[in-house]
Image (cartoon, rainbow, N blue to C red; front, side, top):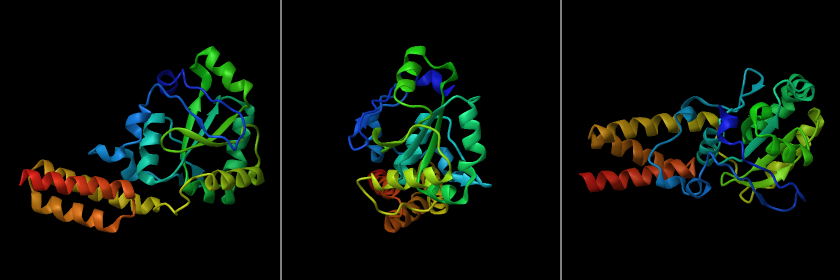
Length: 232
């Protein structure tokens, strides 16, 4: 379960203007900052979108969420909550179903952490800094913006907009449909490479490198081309 893997994580909640670090025992942030060194993509990326059927598609595994964020060129929106919390239930039913709010979630990778089985000391520290927790994080784990508390639709719109503005790179990320297609093409390239069908692999990698919709996938494709060149 997610919370067992990251029971020692904590937030340092001071000024929103400052940048703080999220410590996650389940993730090596040093490795996370070098996605191009990884030859594979998270399998979920080939079928993921942050909103579907009028609902936010929360990811309940922190490592998966950050892996997707690195490739999708998006920040993580981390929601720390208790599943039975009346405030959280109300926000799910109201503010988090608002069309304006859902539109802004397109620019995030939403990750949810249920505190139910967390270490008591970790819970105490988090609750002292505001609950429910909402934090915008860069893919390397740096907290860029925090807005704990109860929120209606208007408040979510305001804070999600501010969170996006806090990113150092404000370039528009690739669409989820583009990422899905590129992830599938990359998977096909990897399969072709692994079976030594280098012509097919080269064509797929070259297309991904040329498109450069996702900077990470483009770099991974470049490395794939280099591997093929060495193997051939």
